[in-house]
Length: 134
Image 1 (tube, helix red, strand yellow):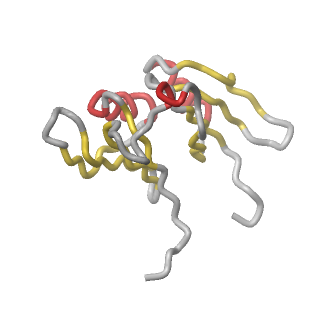
Image 2 (tube, helix red, strand yellow; image 1 turned 135 degrees about the horizontal axis):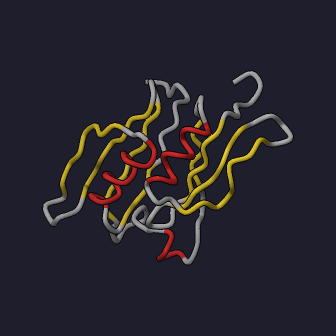
């Protein structure tokens, strides 16, 4: 099968079950497949947003994909989520206790967006921006 270009961020959390709950509450994700790891964590989980939006996550593990921002001493990347109503997304994230990194704003290129840090240090940005031709 040839890849179709659909992207799916994958993140690791020290407390993946709590992260699932928080991401649902803060950002409106819907829980899909959740596979426990047998040790109180998550081997694999899928969170859905909108029609095609998907984030996979699991518990931190001692492998090449298992690090978290705290173990790295900072953030190595972030997730941008295009949304139709950045103001509503912002209010929901704030109500769930998200740490605001970049206040809700309208940029000089016309996007309405903001950035937050989740409870384990991952950075999420939400906004109306979408590249031309995308």
